[in-house]
Image (cartoon, rainbow, N blue to C red):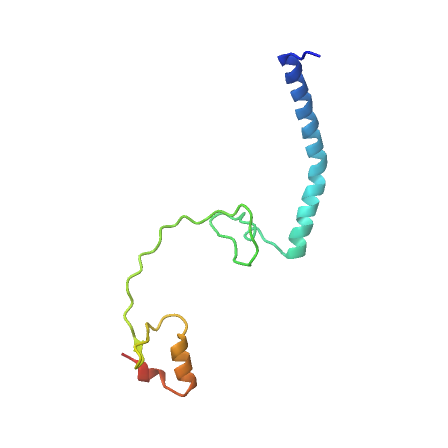
Length: 116
């Protein structure tokens, strides 16, 4: 059974038409399942990475197709130390208290006593 190029092209065209027809039939049920999942989990366009200019919320869910931010890293200068203990532990005063300071404060020390 010898096939010619035109026979194969004709078969490809028929298969593509069949594939498009099947896709159109399945599309309704796929969209319904997606809408159901969105409603069940309370997802938003931002969760799915579909809003322009806004990154997806950090919800612990993996968001497929979310774009990575390509912003340039900020230049961060050194911050002077504001607090120091007798052992040389330091803290700039930014962010959470470090463990050494939390422990000292829990023992009754005053924050002002560590000022540099």
